[in-house]
Image 1: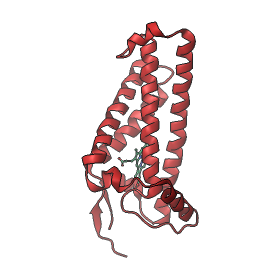
Image 2: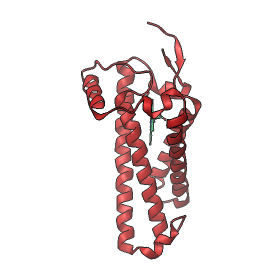
Image 3: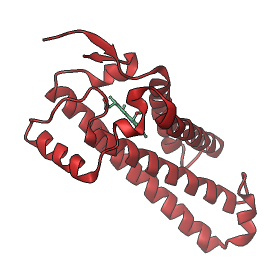
Image 4: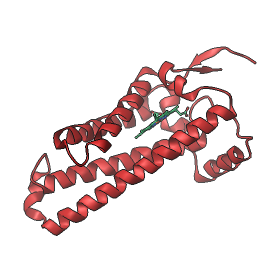
Length: 186
Ligand code: HEM
């Protein structure tokens, strides 16, 4: 087996990933109390996503969306192959991983924007003007939707980590370590 190592994940992608993991865990576990920490973690997630989306257009080859976002048919075919344990190895994100990246970015953005909306409706932050435009009932509904999206994002994270573990076993490589070092087998 060729053991030559190549650089796959650039420093920005790695910094983005592990800072995002820390910020998401912080936001999730401070939801009920520690409001200031919760809000700060939410803003941090939004800032990280903004940078990552820009990097998806101008960043290193494996970070670019056009190199890992594939049509639904390709994603489904890849998932079928993965179940049959004959999925091809990809040095960057595989088609299912690419779809998961997009789903995570969208769900995280929606969760954070809804959180900002709720915070604004409660009279705080940049959307504070929403306070006078909403009733207590509306605020309660926004809170429910915000929680729904946060929990749905946790579900996605569960499948994301399961996919990482499965692919690591299938191709006998440590994908988690690669997200730390940036290096993978050629
Ligand atoms: C401890 C748990 C986690 C582990 C072990 C993990 C591991 C990984 C690995 C290995 C990759 C690269 C996959 C590949 O090789 O194609 C990746 C990508 C990614 N993960 Fe995670 N992840 C974790 C938690 C999370 C969480 C909590 C989030 C979001 C809330 C997240 C969001 C992402 C995103 C957006 C990418 C794409 C990175 C990029 O291209 O910039 N991950 N993760």
